Image (cartoon, rainbow, N blue to C red; front, side, top):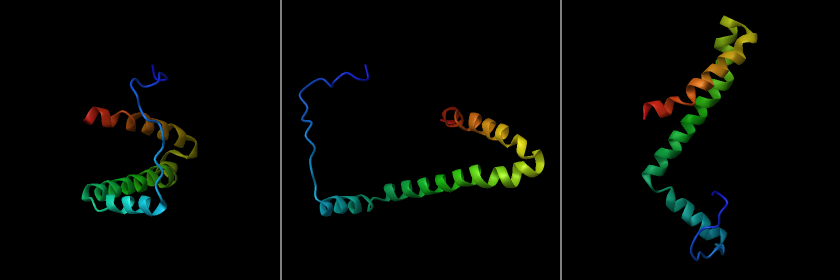
Length: 89
């Protein structure tokens, strides 16, 4: 199913644009306020992930449970964090 070719007559040629046109379209997209909010959300998400996987285990889990239990705590975090967005929406 996933490997079947698409139905119909599609032109599969790749349109080539110059670097100048590509950069112009990139900066044109950045004028949209929704894209700027999306970029801010992506940056926040990256900072949060960095905190969760770098600072949280060494600064919070280690002093209370020890280094041997960091893997278990992070596994439980991943198991809970994965399905949570689906249960909220």
